[in-house]
Image (cartoon, rainbow, N blue to C red; front, side, top):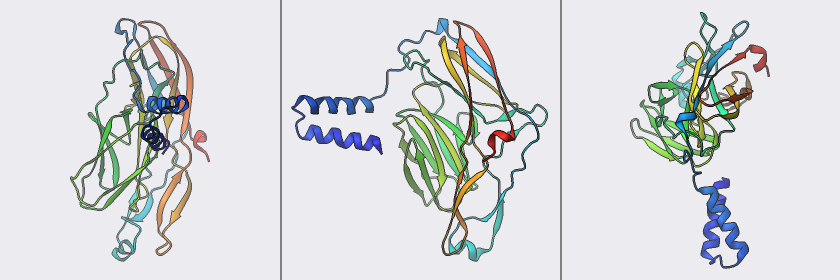
Length: 295
């Protein structure tokens, strides 16, 4: 919403002529915030290094119960009397052989966008399929995607059911998908985390988009391994992020008493300082356990 206010202010000042010095300064500041930052202009591949490591689980695996609910919260869903068990989308995916955690997000803070490598991550497609939010990015199909600030994402329903996709956080919108295979797109101009939910009663659906100017984001693989390549030398904060499966609150339909929306407890975020010398490879690791997610 702040971006729209800046646009309105900028247009208003331009409409008035913006002739005085103060108006010109305000208009210039608003315009600057709407422009993409200079990225990768000073990237030097000859000095870049890499960061690699693992995210693992310690201790007993949590028991995360499923949601028993119909496909929707309206009266028609109650009349159909068809209920299913829907998995909690935030249940940690732990490989029992290695204790590695899949689909944890590892990223860097403190990167100078000018020194970052050019954005080379594939475009994001959000698919609503089988009442689950799938984020497709290259060969990855996961609950998480990474988007360059200012670029557009594509969203589509893959099933003959009414979907209403809601986004909040660094972006705020709701888009209806009454028919399958009719994609819509939306540009994401602000950096930050966007949470995707269903506003059509499929309260268990979740997806997340990290929006930034720099591409140093990674999902862990099925054994918890991650890698960040072509990183300029410097001092950074290495961050590990995983959503929380505990429920903070929920809302119910006043007529059917069915749950229509849930809010999860805040995600767990661990960080550690990291110094990367030119052409070096740094090993790093994160350890998560059930007590970190306790409400």
